Length: 205
Length: 194
Ligand SMILES: [Zn+2]
Image (cartoon, rainbow over all chains, first blue to last red; front, side, top):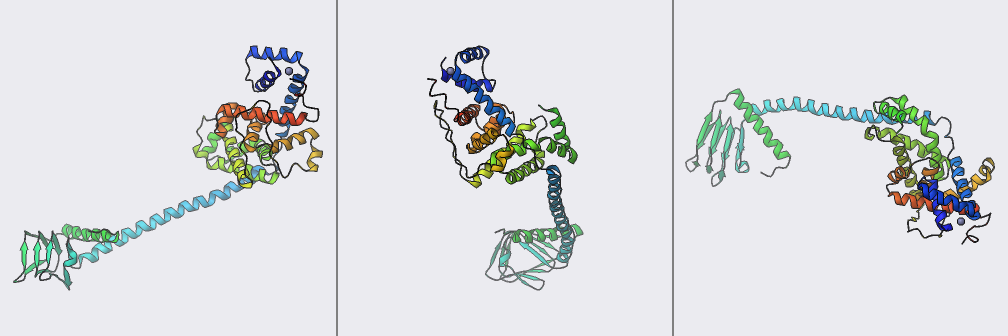
């Protein structure tokens, strides 16, 4: 064993990373080698001094300051949570109050639901399919009159409403008249609400 | 595994503030001393030590009971110290393969311990403290964790997210550099031996 090996092994011994035979070899080298003994001593000194350096007490009041900070930190996080819950509650309340109101006002007015609704013109309680226009797809009309001057290709469902076919008007498809039960009215109102929401959300239908 | 720590962490997780305060009392001196040696001044060390425990508290949920507490705590402290040093000045990584006999080059620090501190501590300890402060941070942390705080190779490797072989290399080079500095005045033995 030379001094280089011994020096490496001194480090390993410090970390309990040396086998027993290797330890014996190292010890016999150390007994014969003065310079390596000095290295052993100075390494030991480095380690023990470092242990000394790692004892620096924290300033007085460390724990008390910390616990105070913790309480200050906790408060906003709780209030942020309650604020969020309150916002949710308000939104829910609005929905609960506004949606029946909306349904009720919708029920008192004539309504038309159609795939081709852009073509249809409303005048008071009359929904008019203008002459020369073709409406394709299903139509649902609630209260009022549907006047067909142009053409309608699709099923027409009337709820408390009538269809007036103009001399040049044409309807290709079937027509159903629905008795205006409260459930049917409600269904129409909800369908209308749904259409509005879809429109608001930017549905391109 | 320290069962007292486990019990206290379990209680703290359930919202017991006094259990948490007990943990802080147990480790504040060690963490403060570690951070002081890492960053080199008392105000920053105090701020970082407080921040360490605040992070422990806010991460209580992520701590799994049965997981060793001490390495977890030191990992938080080490990350904070290294971030702090990175913000203060760029660090030099010295993870080049170890060449026998080539001493680790020490970084230059603007401020060593002041004269007042040299008086209050043993002259040699102060000298070593300054030399420790001159080590690159990734060497300094390995060295401090091993000898000042008695963590194992594996624990240090986990804390720093490096392989165990890197821990051993850094430890060897840091110790060797400091030993050489310490015995500089007593003449280098290498000249005679070999
Ligand atoms: Zn020798």
